[in-house]
Length: 633
Image (cartoon, rainbow, N blue to C red):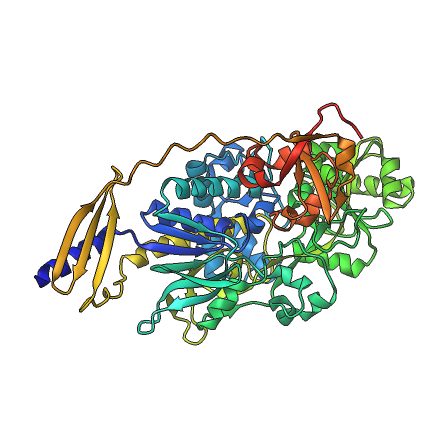
């Protein structure tokens, strides 16, 4: 009878969890995914790279939070209102004096006032300490959180914990949680009647596929890598930066894909010409013209590091905002510039310094005379700078406006150890992006109304940071607005009436429902009603033969050392020899991270930033042998 058809179908529909599609597997996408799944949604995550993480894993300083439990334990009297003011001053460029009413803006308020909840969410759900805080440039209090134990950059620590949790869910509940990688989304699918977004089309291995859902979250990152690519979105909106041939800290995936597919269906954008050039990209002296660089964490200056020109002189407030310091570098025009920490400053950020030294982008020297030689100036010039700096601290009289309360490591003397790195301005972050509201809805370009079923979070969304982003607010934006998108999706899916089931006149629709005991129930819907029955349990699969482990060849380190080019690159990690020639193009940290250790043993550096199971989990196919334990170069 007709009643059976209707009743049975809608019971099945109600039982199925609504599916949310997230484009992008960095911290914003993962925060949205976890928020949605914690509320009961199924999730499909699509990422165009081989591995999740994006630029989020590279974030070096930490995540901002005002009024957190960690700040309270550390005796820091911060507040969301003070953080909001700092954010607005950075966003508008109004450094001093009263802020006009027009300067305050809603997205900055959301970022600041929900920052503590974001930090606490990570601590509670993913078990991270985030117990140490630093004061970065433009901040009135130490509020950039990282774990005091070190062991990983904060971006890697936070993002990887969310990656592991999501991958575990995909393995345990594949019908609810799905990961599609190496897949570039090239189109958003929409309902022709309502205009709501219902899925995505993606290209994988030269073919187009589609996946349908109830809503879509775009979290594809920014477009900073476009500085290396002719015809890119960045070249179109900031030709001046493209023509300067500046380097970038961005992975090759950051080309603005998510922004452009949303524009194709009428999505609006804001501030696309707002691109942040960070002052401290790290130059490797062995490859000085490399254009994809590591970033020197702002926390290095937060812990007291100072910037010196080629004559050993200071030229700016070392803790000024990023746009200010970069501007002073260009105006001062006395490169190469050096970032310098004395032993007292380095003590509080020792893990970072050791990591950069291992990467070959920082050097430890044992005396101020060696520091002067590294800079290329006289020891007397460096001594004069140190003496002057100590006086500025004592009298609170820095001509560039650095308050005495922000100094660290004083007094500075030549009789000390130093960490020194050559730094240069680098395209780092794009503040512009898709136009969103305070609930992460993507707004239409013409009417400024939300596009039903479409949300955005992270660097692909514009308007959160204004003209300039504060250090530590990138990871924060990912979590705050990733969670906003996840929360909004959760509310939205409750209101959506899915399209009617397909007409079955003259045909049959078969629905198979797997059962816990290995059987399944099959429901056949025809024009004359519903028929159902249990499918037979699958036959027991024959026992799989125990895999035979191929014997690995043993190599000496000298043999490995001959494989040291981009076309033939071997690296030793924890006693295993990996052929990284192909893998380096998929490596989340970029090609340079691999080439730094071409033909060498990278074990110490590898273990500083990775869990030891990473090779087995992601790169076991690239193991070609083992390294003889006693071998040396």
